Length: 364
Ligand SMILES: Cc1ncc(COP(=O)(O)O)c(C=O)c1O
Image (cartoon, rainbow, N blue to C red):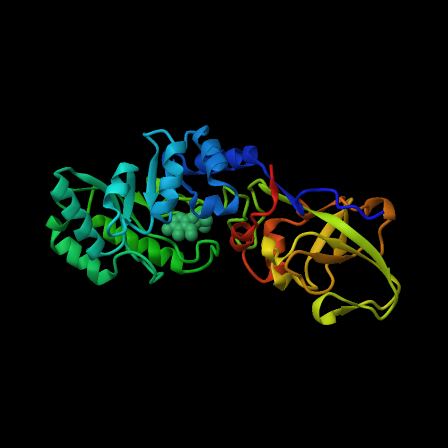
């Protein structure tokens, strides 16, 4: 009798101890510099509250989110002395909420600096901020000409307590990329124009570029969550996310049977197919169609056919029926098939796999 055995199609286990171990490893590399944490996007999909609380226990006191809304959500779960930096700055019209929630903006333009300065003047209080410079991504932060404007008119920062000068590396995971040194040079040139100010440059991969990149505060995200920081090198971080999908049906099919939407895979012999209750609505990307693998009792089995919204199909012909009962769990992200390996098969990066992980999983 075919019975569905679990309320959810999959179980996502998040190893908070591994996150703490990863934090300690990164903090160890940084020496005197502080290790902060990028916890934006719900801590890369892993759950910002338990992740931040695990990091707090390792003495992490600097948390980076992208949006004010993320900061408002996180604030009640952190002690007052823990800083929350909002990387997109303080949105116009929400100043009161920004201040009430004790947030610190990353100021990315002259306009944002003026806005913050005017707010400081209005409430007659010095306001903390990070000032970000673009040193080679053309994405966020003051451009070279805006930097000239700022340094030519230092009164723009009156009333602002600049906690850090910040920039972001474009290609830090590729250690041989000359951009790393170019960005470092540009960043140091900017720092020399505001001597004595603390600085923050490194993301996860930046920490592995060596101590010239460390400065006073690092902002790792991916490495805390187990993603490999250096292309082509063994990953020194512990895996954090473990995903298991549930078998809901198995069937025998004769040779020549098409599987899934579009029949993009067809059996060449009598085969056994297991249907697992995870699909692209759960972040199991459609690009894994006919490319992904799963592990059952330690055996690698191929995903065959297209990924559906709620299901994937595996060719389990090589496995004994005892491993294939409805309700049995198959490994989708595991030590044998890491986030980075899944990403490579899906044609993306580990970050996207993690941040796509669905809301329908049982989460432990
Ligand atoms: C400005 C900034 N700092 C730090 C990070 C964390 O980067 P990573 O996850 O590569 O460590 C990000 C992530 O996108 C970022 O945009």
